[in-house]
Image (cartoon, rainbow, N blue to C red; front, side, top):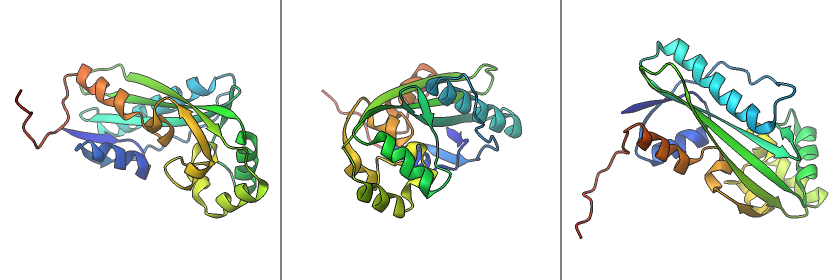
Length: 199
């Protein structure tokens, strides 16, 4: 079965293809506006929902579409993608020596179902105490600029992270385990190229 990814994120595409899925990319035109009053978790769910809805409208509703959104949550405040280097330095300085939460939500548009299927996963992340020089050196790599909270755990920011409690892939931007189980609930199995072992 082919899956349409409503995102231009190379990380999400890589993760979905790692499952052996046939994935086509159709980025959403949704602009991820702020929604005052929404919690960071609600924001992630809403953004995922709107992305899936946007791409489903454009595709005619005949494809299985998945959209996702990640929000970094520091004390109930959403840290989005940085506007510039200074903004990235500000966010990383706030995260330094602290624990925060990362929420990743995904929404599935299934052909024949009007309602979207929405799921979310949350992981706690602890940063080391970071020096100003360490933060500036990381920001100078350019890696933070397209990432919520100004860091990518799968890249150079791995050196900033003291530990996590929860699912690593949620922090990376797509909770694979939760997604696979949701597909199974829909009766969709992952592709396999090997025979199951006999016991």
